Length: 288
Length: 261
Image (tube, rainbow over all chains, first blue to last red; front, side, top):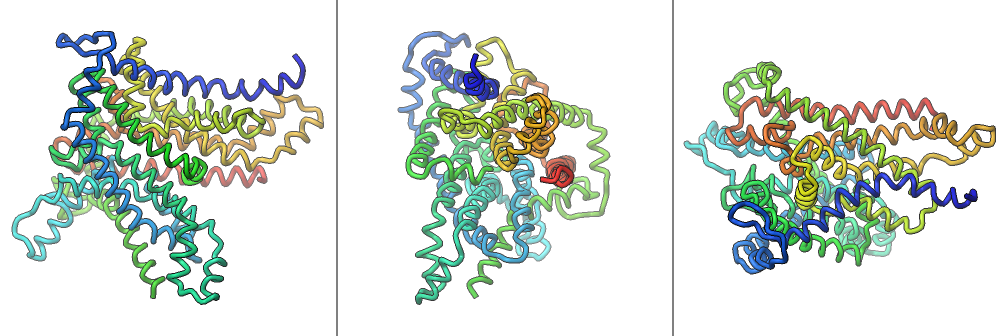
């Protein structure tokens, strides 16, 4: 074999283990559940191999699934909106602050290292019947009996915002940090107010970061089932909870496959639209 | 005026992010019987209680072994792939990158279901092996992103100098490239360990009955009521997952300084 040929083969030898892992542990399994979703779980608990449209018919026409899917998208949307409103000014501040930028950034990274389940359950200590708020209110005398503030849709959104906010801030930060401050100065020197300069110069330039953060918040928020289980009530199930129920509780794996694929398609379409207009590079900037 | 408003807002955002977590740590030292306010005194009893709780110790052992194995495999695969992508002209490099990042573009629930059902079809039931496969595939993209970002910074000419002075490719790799890469490798491994250690979404699908990791153990304990033990367990986890990376970053900086990059 020539030297050139060996040179050309080398990267593929290095890539083979990782590509094999991704193929066998992700792509083949995904293809497999596509097939699996057309099988049927019979009353005896065995799978009937074949091409049945029953699961898909049920998943796509039953209003129960449709309502929960719509509600999931609604929750993810509100979560994303709140993250953007809370996170944008904070990210802007970090990017433009002069003194303690490194410390602010380190603090921003910390939540990524703190376990999701702990951050989620920490709200029980704050809002629970014997949590910080109730204790404080009763001590001051605003209320006599503790009130249950937990286990509703609002606390699910609260938990999700708490979990996803760092993703939003980080992405917007990366974007704003890359904008030359001279641009804003130039705008103001030409007679724009600081607010005008922000709205017409900085904000449009930071939209890719805002979009990347929003995509992450939406997709991660819409795919969760832990937050509703910990902070939601019995009626606050999200779509991923239905998947969990079908797979783990009811052991109806063909139906679970169909529901998983529905979720994948709905969120995948969003990722593709994003990729079409903005490309994956922006997203990788925020992740790396 | 506007700037102060933004500053105030940022402070509030940081308080929102950290206050609940701070309360977990605070309450873990509460002497009271119940995992809630008011604080009745300062005590380490819940940490002692943790130490005496077999189920929790078992969960810790599982999480640590799983995290270490995940880090080992994921980092090996990730470093090799990153080397290929950074050091060689790979035809279709963009496509290859996207394929390797795919596990984090797919919602974790869907990844969990697909892997569980497929491996079960192959005869691998819910087991430690399934958990390990799952954690490897889920952490691999993060390792590749982190390692790649740092590999780019290593200069090629040092290796070329070694080769021109008569070192074989193997010698060059082990004596020059690997030591220079070490911070990147460690960062990747640490990242993989922490993500594995924290994971619950996939783990709940993959874990066999009776086996718990620390997050699933906390989740199971939440079903009863919030006990001071959960807060103590949370505190230990925070110390582990925040303290380890900070320590790792410090070590990496030391190494980088010594090797002069």
